[in-house]
Length: 292
Image (cartoon, rainbow, N blue to C red; front, side, top):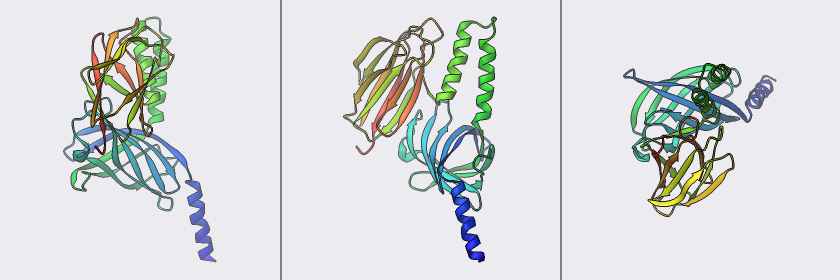
């Protein structure tokens, strides 16, 4: 009788943590030398399996988005996960030299936990340890509410210039869409197995007349294109180990800087990005084809 009750209890716990979105958490990595690195995760759970992505040093010079996988134990309510593949990075570090986070099991209650912390080890792809420390994460929804309140307050003020209002709306949009910011003289590296990448280009906010050009390996692909809310799709063939895409701000609209939204899709991953460029500034996206 006790064994039957035990089995029913286990099944009940498993059903409670069926396929669901655990949400986004934002915080920081604390290394053993007391340095902090911003960190964000989005997690989904399917019974005892966890998947999602992480964003390290977001907004920084080494911003990196990686895939996550892990496990959740419904009996002990312990969550663990690790990074295992780079989606994009702004660091010069290549895949084999990248230090992946392995988050050790810690208490987590789906739908209830708003803050959690635990220890992690950093491992290279060959399993050799690189760094270790602590991870602190807070539910993103708490931060989103603050951004909403700030944006509403700014937009309702008659004393705030339109340029500042647009920047606040851009921040709200980037937070909502989880965007990669493409800055001047910056190279963002994408790793893919696809033979082509689709660029989806549009204005994600108020149309204000931004103009861009796009070069691929030095050749002009799109010349002085005016950005509107109408979506423009361009397919970029990936025919070699490295393909360089350059985005040039030919014109800045009537509000703020050039803020063109560019989504990159390779059939597996989708990366949402936004340019933050002054006139004549450019940013680059370097595409490495894995396996070549």
